[in-house]
Image (cartoon, rainbow, N blue to C red):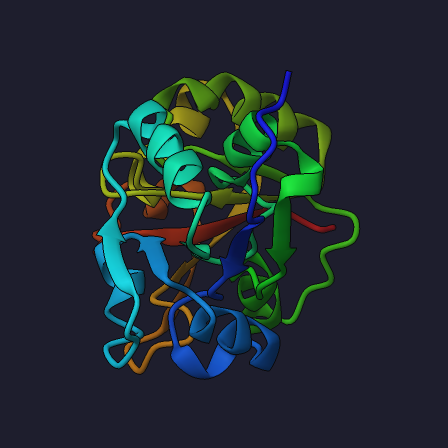
Length: 216
């Protein structure tokens, strides 16, 4: 059963990286925070806030317990990269406290920017995340076989090159890979590669990969 809170937790989507992509409503709600919870990168976007800043660590169970305690007397705002309802810990927070105790402010997803960067629609795409989850490759390979377009969230371990190797091992060759790095930032780059050539591509940090069936 969900644990109801005295003050709702506000979960704010902070977009893909550049502060100008954060919506006015998101900024308004961030200003209301007594306690601001997020990654180091996201907290750095708001140096002037007077809120107490809490860095998210991996102990989510303890974090949820603290959020419940803080919410008795203070306004807690949780920062999430991209859109809160797309591969984030929002699901965990809502499951713990219930929909009635959570206010979610949408944000622009890096997936949207990636499709815009390559000039493709995305209503017919499938989505997978291997960000922090190496177990996602079975699902990835199935979706690449079943869909003409698949968008993938990556990390420093599960890189575009590793994805290309997994696809090659599965016998998937007739695809193009679009590797979108540092979306919205000044050093944004987009590479278009074959599966074979992507196996040797060096990237830095997280990228969005779009895998498109050749000829579609």
